[in-house]
Image (cartoon, rainbow, N blue to C red; front, side, top):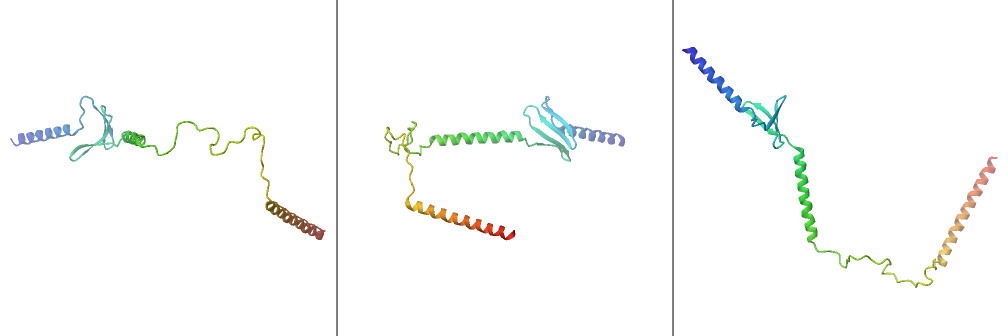
Length: 165
């Protein structure tokens, strides 16, 4: 009798462990999930959504955690930027033009602020402004000083060569 109760207890315990193990394994319903073993559990791929999770067994049972999906994050960021872009375009279109006096017609080829020259001889005539007397005096003074310095350098060099020979 004692043997029978020990066996019954063992069967009940083993049956409970089997049921707990069967319930704690990640659900594979109709081929929705594809499992691949890894060192500390399994990787679960949801074939309907493409979501990837890592599943591991702990003392409390199996737990699955979603793997961060860079593609989803990038698509979310692209969507956010597209929405921001559309909002900014709408705001820009709603603004009143800030430039006053702007026209859509092309401007004339001549500068409208300059007076138009007479057409007969103006195209052939080139005017070059001549320097003033003051400018000429400054230029002559510069040339004289430069010439004097060159002569002084030549004299020093001649003395240096004559002293060495």
